[in-house]
Length: 164
Ligand SMILES: CC(C)(COP(=O)(O)OP(=O)(O)OC[C@H]1O[C@@H](n2cnc3c(N)ncnc32)[C@H](O)[C@@H]1OP(=O)(O)O)[C@@H](O)C(=O)NCCC(=O)NCCS
Image (tube, rainbow, N blue to C red; front, side, top):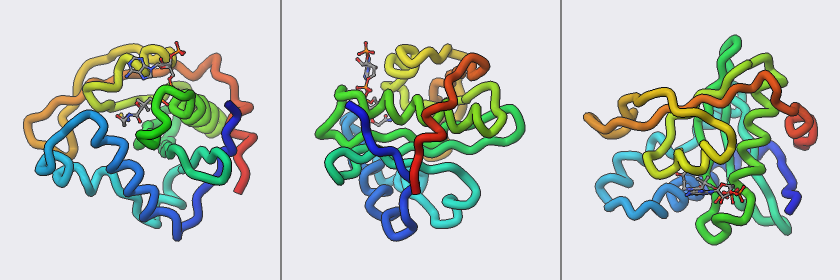
């Protein structure tokens, strides 16, 4: 399914933060855990300048969001969240392809991912490789899996198809 990929407007950021929260909750975390993650799942308007953010739209409805930050040759995947009602429908792949394309177009040769512990099977399917663990920014003592996607042979067409 081809999704419309576009940059969100600043007024849409609260709804996108809510989407991230709903999406993270699919892994059945309790309320305290989810609240501890809320800040990390939210967008600040300044991030529209300091990072690249995209939404995937289907029939005029936002079904996912991704955010990357590129510093030199390295990119970080800061967010990748799919609306729970459309999981396993290809939105995650479309967002990941966009993230790789955008990062490569901005000069990065690798995309670093600090994922939810439930997400590595998806990222491995997208060609990423495991490269250790990092401390969670939200929960003291929690470790998150770290993965890396080599971008040197990445297609950049996805990035150039973004509108807005
Ligand atoms: C992880 C996530 C982004 C995947 O998005 P999605 O739209 O469901 O994934 P897609 O439908 O595009 O799947 C792409 C491929 O990955 C596979 N895949 C997706 N989720 C998977 C999972 N949990 N386990 C194993 N494989 C998975 C699909 O089967 C598909 O494989 P195929 O190429 O053989 O058909 C989505 O589950 C999500 O948003 N989860 C909650 C939030 C989250 O944890 N985000 C990641 C933060 S690090």
